[in-house]
Image (cartoon, rainbow, N blue to C red; front, side, top):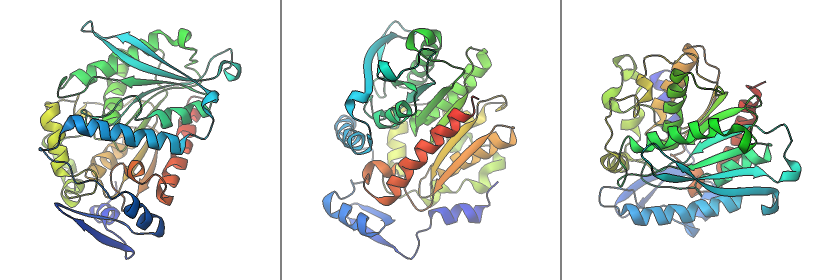
Length: 355
């Protein structure tokens, strides 16, 4: 397991970094030439806190994600077939999933690998546009993605998003042939931030239920895996990022508190803190992306090490000195382009695990 000193070094800014101050917030980001221009064009948003209007934030995030999709879609729109479909949940309500697939002429008759994707947003923000770019990356690799618009807090607090996510995963599993998915080529569950939390939870629930077809991979980008109250004592010495990055850019302790107050989880439940599931064996291989200046950094690193120690294959990309979800805020920066390239290679890695 990575030492405390090595972990702290991931959040420490190098000599080329400088402090950027603004009214009511204090942040640090890498000041390269491209970032200087980006800061002039679009200064970072004020840190979120309990006074933030969650509904206005949803609109703002949706606009940013649409811009990110446009910046990271390599193929023309005609290369994709994207269909929204309503699917039933356990409480009798319906949610929307967006099915991303190659155009029919490029879709093999025997089926494509499948990905079930859950967006980020602190369980309170986000929607189908959040991970469109990522789903299209999967489609570019020849896959079919089911992009899930699970219900959000505060209207639908814990554990409603977990239930929606699990119901969407099991719906996909039961409609494999209709969707054109060949699970032998790959059946991956994935998510970003809060969505990665859902993916981790689902991988355990799906395993414990012994469902078929089996999952073949997990895409876990900037995951939240354990609330501080639930953290086992054995990991306290290396759980440093919540304090080190409590005033971080994009995600900080105030915004975490805001999201948790709206989500209202039981912090000790494995449905919120999946790191505390009794066993992590017999899970599918996992690809992790973790940011060095992210309050969630160490719970991700701890969970990755737990999987390796449990005999699960993992691949890990770390982004030292960069904050939670940096690629959304600075899509044209060189480090964001590297992140997008890493994502494609990480998805390829997961595809390779199904062979």
